[in-house]
Length: 65
Image (tube, rainbow, N blue to C red):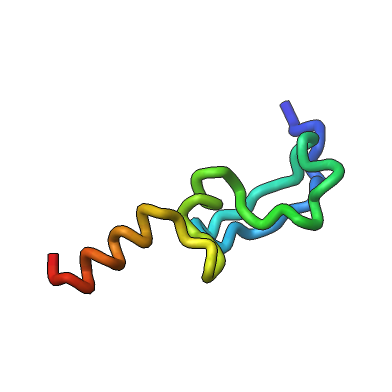
């Protein structure tokens, strides 16, 4: 059985380096989609928008923990 939709647009996830294809839920925002999943989006955040856990880790490393 062949795939019914072989020509969907594809992008590369900058975190996991895997290709991902267009999904119906992204039909209105495909140009803004960067990551393949919420998990990858959570792993890599732009500078200045780090999570509170990352901030705590930075503070601990400064103290020598």
